[in-house]
Length: 291
Image (cartoon, rainbow, N blue to C red; front, side):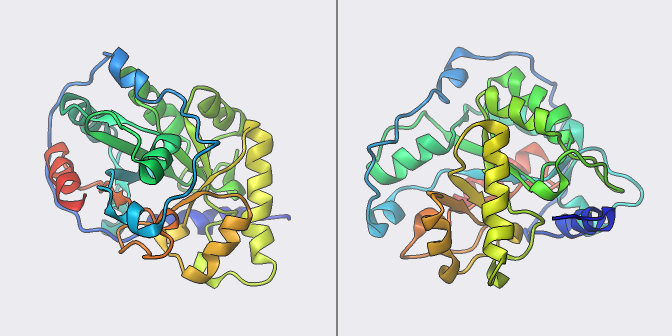
């Protein structure tokens, strides 16, 4: 499919308002850390999920939810950024302070295999588990997020929107294929976030091919790994579309903060937006209150 720079620019504008969350203002001055701990690194060790049988929905829903954070852009605010846009843009030092707070509070990052094993079998997780997710392929997720997490021994999940790979937009630049592969090779997880962020609830006809099949194939070619995780654009989902994800081999799908589906909780896993207005303390309180 051919696409114009207008498509990418439009997508950039839409993504700034892609989700809804309550936010609070605040500041924090926590020093950056350069300590990588053996314990934190070990928590993301590979887990064999090949023989795991999917549990019934009641069992999964009964397990305590693992905190999952959703980030978009990590950069300093610009005069042209609007009030709503700033909710999805975490400034660089604030992001570093937030990650330092998580590490100092004893949080250990986990990856989808660990979450999948826990939800289905009750497999043990490290103390204070948390999952970090980053949507939309923004370049700052490689240049700012990656080294920040690496210093703390943290790993994350990057949900890639394939229309923008390697492109330079009017508002943001996007990661290249080589950078996405590097993230994957370094032990992070790459997940699908559709072709161009079209609302999942409106898919019909060729949308399943354009928004799921082609992006999945492209990401698998880039990483050399099967795509098993999916993030809904805008966090919006419907029960009718879940079977389409299942038959394509996805095993978990991530929404935002609405109630999980009583029949398919693995395909409506909750996340919360880490607001650009939140200080580390506010983020800490939001994690405790939301999960």
